[in-house]
Length: 274
Image (cartoon, rainbow, N blue to C red; front, side, top):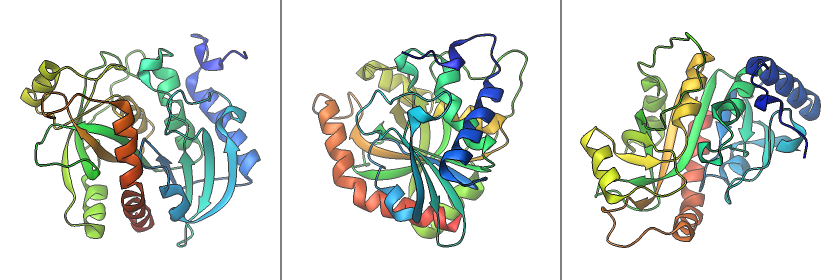
């Protein structure tokens, strides 16, 4: 297996991201993108609705990317031309923190998106809901996050302000498309095990509404790169201790499949409005 350049601690992750952006430009024929979109579980069909696909590239053909480990992530990078002329980079290859590759690999897609010129990063995920009135299949805006991984993509004395990390401006635009959208604070756990009922209650006590295993580290890296961030969670299930039944990954995937047409259409309309 070919070694990933990001695994070399002496390598510059931003140089690798620039090399990946060059690969994307060469493979897609598109020199610059405006918006980047990471598709989490349940959000995959949005790419079909955003606009005209100009090119689809296997993620493994791009420097620093590897095959996704999780079902529901398609393993491709797609360049799309939206009807309003916006160039959208759709990332279907997400490296999760629980895979054990370290933060550099986790946030490489975000840094690559920034290197292609994207100024807005849209991060989506499938997650557990703590708010008992939420239902499986419901999309929720991320208003803020709590990073419970104990890690960061920032290296050295790098101090980044995370005020308004999930940009209110972009959330307001999303609500012009769907005024009923609720929002909440996302808690990223390390995973891959689901959270215990006690951990869910801890997340609730410290201000969390959503629990999952992605997104927070990516959002930090996006802010470091100067991007605006819009976050969406698909509530695939009520979290442990909130749900009356045990959690099942198969049920999470099924909830995502059932909700996919509706939430994908919503996301495509939001992207067009950004």
